[in-house]
Amino acid sequence: AGFDVWLGNGRGNIYSRNNTKMSLNSTNFWQFSWHEIGAIDLPDTIDYILEKTGEKQLHYVGHSQGGTSYFVLTSFRPEYNAKVRSAHLLAPAVFMGNTTHPLVHLFKPYVSVPGGSGMRLLGDQMFIPHNMLAQRALDTACGGEPRFPEFCRTLFYTWAGTEASNINATLLPYIAETHPAGISTNQGIHYIQLHNSNFFRQYDHGVQKNRKVYAQAEPPNYQLENVSADTYVYYGMSDTSVNWQDIQRLPEHISSLKLLYKVPDESWGHIDFIFAMKVKETINEQVINYCKQYEIDGVIKEN
Image (cartoon, rainbow, N blue to C red; front, top):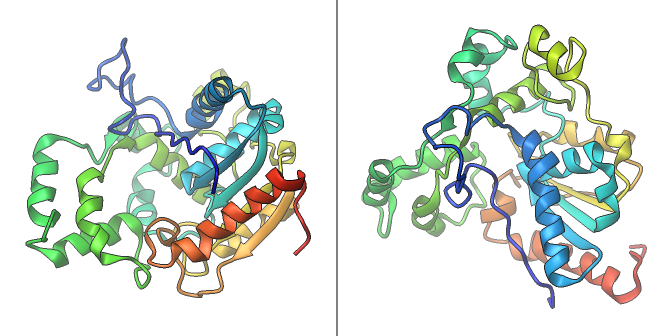
């Protein structure tokens, strides 16, 4: 396609843990959510790329939390809109009121009280730790020629959601080599908070700490009206994580939305944007073609 591709790693995964001041075993290390990824890490990443390439803008492509952190960035730090030539967001997790993902509903009863005992017990930790023992068990069960294929599929669908008809099953052994990669429990808690509130807003610490952090009892909403970079959103009708009804709320908040694309395949789900057998022709080629138009004439052509 003629594009340099820079792949970022979310804070806390196995490729992004080189903190020289804090141990992985410290709760201080895991005291972050996707807010910090969007407000701190993404700006640093973008600045680094633009400095190294000498470019003034880049094209951004993000899936799921990659879309969440993009909207945090462009709403919370709107000056970065000028550095994004176009953004392509695949099933961005923003409004979550209609999600049916099993993990959200599994943990929801335990962390629904902001600042409550459940949050204090489960927060600031690594979720699904990636360690040698767990990885060896996964490799033995699922790597290469899986010894327990049904067990592997069950694990995968618990993590990825129940939609599965488009998944390339031959990838499961390779996925097992790097997944789970580890995140902070706060990231999951933050998504559950979005589901409970039905707003796209900052982390809810509870009234007392909210007053200290935000100078108000409730966490502030992200000002999506600040998003001014050309934005393209792609979604699937069988997505249990990012429900199509929640996606439909985006146009009323984002005036720079250039495309709201529903994948024609009604069975298309959340993980299909990464692992589906037809992801190349369904999503990737379309994203590349839109990006190319900016390089050809600087504007997107009407379809």
